[in-house]
Image 1 (tube, one colour):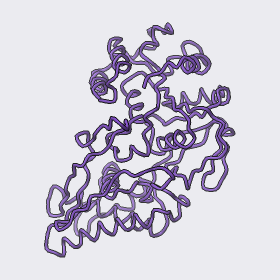
Image 2 (cartoon, rainbow, N blue to C red; image 1 turned 90 degrees about the vertical axis):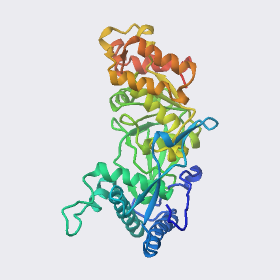
Image 3 (tube, helix red, strand yellow; image 1 turned 180 degrees about the horizontal axis):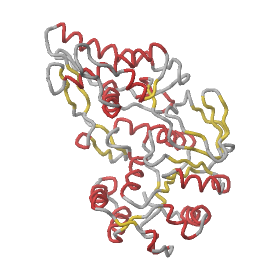
Length: 393
């Protein structure tokens, strides 16, 4: 953020090791990063106030969260945010609304931190929702408007959402040969029954600690339906691993936990996703990070993650029937071409994979392997892929 007299550029990515990026003593308590985060919020308000008192147009500079401001670090193999910024002025009719929303959410986050409490994204929307005095204008038209502003605030402050005491709804599950300590409670992920352990939004080291680990790898699957098959078949027990799912594109908590288990426990990550542009993109997000949240890649991306399947060539290799074919739509084709053009997919294996899918003219879901047998995917497909090291990166 900045004033016309002084411009302050804060780094929007920071080292994740040791849990110093988003530590927490409890999901409703004070955190070790609170003092730093409050200082940044106060500086934001102070800069805006100083500009207004000086008779100038108050503004906030927000790092641009777009493909145009995302760069591919070939050495580190992750997406990073560039230096481009967008200015929001109070006295600009086209920017005033977002400017005031940014200030409103900043004030709400400061209050949360000072009280040692947390709120969900949904609750934060309601906390900030009111009708402006003397008008019929609401501060937000819906949560779809407040969530992006909160992300803007994250990158402007260089503070993660967890550091602002805001969390997302739980989505994703984990089970396997690992014991964790969640806010002081010891949880054996080997004894999670059919439902598994729900991965929380905040999984930083001072909230989630790792205990006894016997696993040799992590298998991440795209959907809960596939995860349920692997869990029921006790795949994680037979093959000594940890099994996770992210409900489609994995949320931050799932991606962060995967990164921590990979980094701190030294476990390789294998991905079992659909053979379509969206499955390919999910793999991209896990491996390189997302364009929209490139400032978080350093603490979430897993450049060494491997794509096991399902693969376009599996249709012929395993003699699947025409029944499993789902025709590629025009939208699918457009998305596939976009993904093929990403620099991190510029290798022979991925170019061949995408071209084969396009030549087939259809996509496939992991569930299509059930046509070979109810437990074919857990008993034959994945074990054979892993044994043969038949994956792409």
